Length: 110
Image (cartoon, rainbow, N blue to C red; front, side):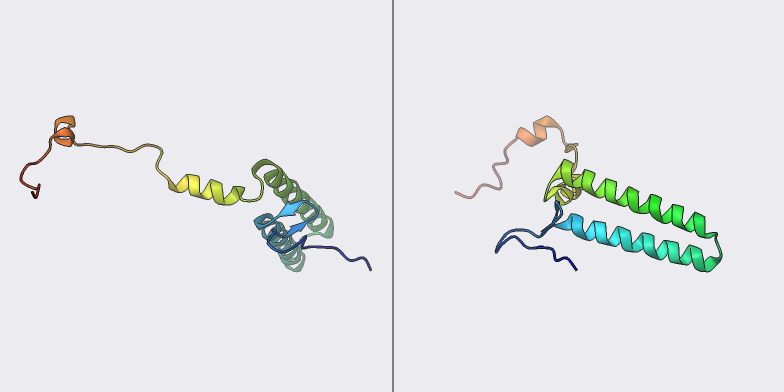
């Protein structure tokens, strides 16, 4: 039985076969979901070849997409994408320009 080194050192992120950080959880969760889907299809009475094809195609898609995302976005990429989606693209100011520039003398304390 072969053994794999998962952690490369103190303070560094977990890496396994090139997958880093949150991509490991995405990879494992996706494969677990495909496994459960195949088991449900098999119990439901779907043909075994259809189940095998569904499992192989789903697992291939999960593996390909996970490694593609890891290569494209890097270690913290999924968090950066989520943060970018939460920020507004532009800020709308509906006040008149004169109102924004005008200084109020009443609120000033001397």
